Amino acid sequence: MAYTKKAQTFHRKSGQRSALMKSLARSLVLEERISTTEAKAKALRPMVERLVTYAKSGTVANRRLTKAKLGDDEAVKKLFDSIAPRYVDRKGGYTRIVKRTLRGSNDARKLAYIAFV
Image 1: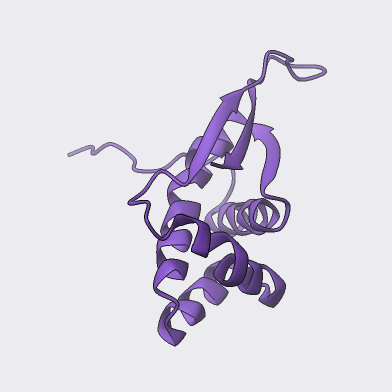
Image 2: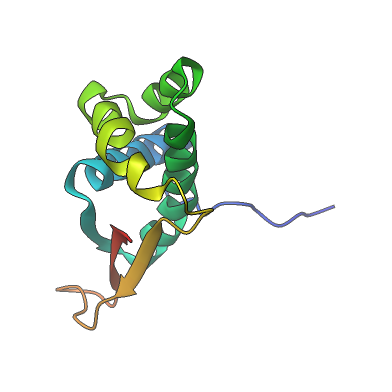
């Protein structure tokens, strides 16, 4: 029986796709606002929101889980020390996606910003 796929593949193999999401998540944590395609922003949102939820508790186990997902000590430190304390009273919805009107240069891809609220 054919079941619906849970995630978009972006025409990439699984290793390339996980490296893409890890790179986008790292950039978002370090820059706090990035511009990407709308589809990638929508795929990135659940991952980043889960990482912020991990960082809110601040345990060593959650720090290690976050390190495994981001792969960068600097990004983990920023997430736990400066980003997560902002959202202690918030239950979810840490990121926002804003669609851009400007299209890509040579194709019709939809561009968007993803940023922390």
